[in-house]
Image (tube, rainbow, N blue to C red):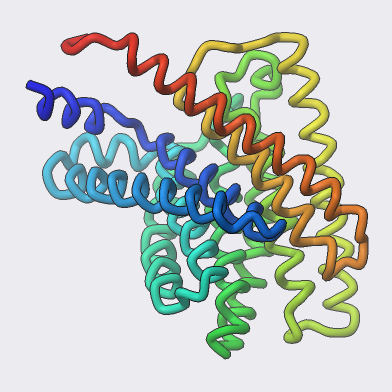
Length: 315
C-alpha cells in the first residue's frame, strides 16, 4: 500500500514540478559563488535527485502514456524539462564535471525545439507567468553553453550561446505581450517568472560579457544589455514583492517553486554580473538576495511537507 501511494504521488506531479529542480539548482550555484560550498552541495544533491525522479517520470509518460504526454507537452510548463536540465548542467560544470554537463546540454538541446514548437503552436493571450518559460528554457541553454565554452575550449559553444541569447530576448518580448498582468496580484506563483526570465537573460549576458570571444562594440553592447536586463529584473522583483504584500497568497501551490526560482536567479545574476560589468555593489546586493531566496526555499519546502502530511491516500 505504501509503495503504491508513493508511486501515485509521483505520477500526479505536473510538468511545473521541474521548477523545484530549477530553484534548488540555481540556489546551489549562488551559494557556490559566495563560498558556501557545503550548503551548495546539499542543494545540488537535492536538485539532482529530484531531476532523476522527474526524468524517469518524463520517460515513463513518453513511452507508456502518450496521450497525457502530448497534452502536457503543449503547455509552457513542459519547458521546465529543458530549463531544469540546463540549470543542473550549469552547476555541474561549475563543479568541474564537464563531461556530464556536456551530456546534459545535449539532452536539453534535443528536447528544446520539439517542446518549444509545441508550446508556441498553442499560445494565446492573457497567459499566466509560465508563458515566460519559452525565454527561460532558451536562456538556460545560452547560460550552460557559455559556461562550458571556456573549460572545454569549444568556441562554437560561445557562438551558439549568443544565438540562443538573442532568440531568448525575442521570446521574452513576445511572452510579455501575451502575459495577463492581472496575474501579478492573483497568480499562484508562476507569475514571478516574468521577472525571473529577465534575471536568467542577465545571467546569460554576463557570461557572454566575460567571454574572451567578444570584444569591442559587441562586448560593450553585451555589458549594457546585462545591466539593463538586471535592472528590469530588479524592478519586477520590487513590483512582485509589493503585490505579494498587498495580496498575500499563503496557500501552498506547486507553482510556488516558480517563485523561488526567480528569487534565486536574480540573486545569482547579481553575483555573476558584478565582475564582468565592473559594478561591484552588485555582489553584496546579490548576497542579501540569495539568503532571501534560501529562506523562501525553506519555507516552500516546509509548506510542501505540511501539505503532503495533510493529504490522505485515495484523495
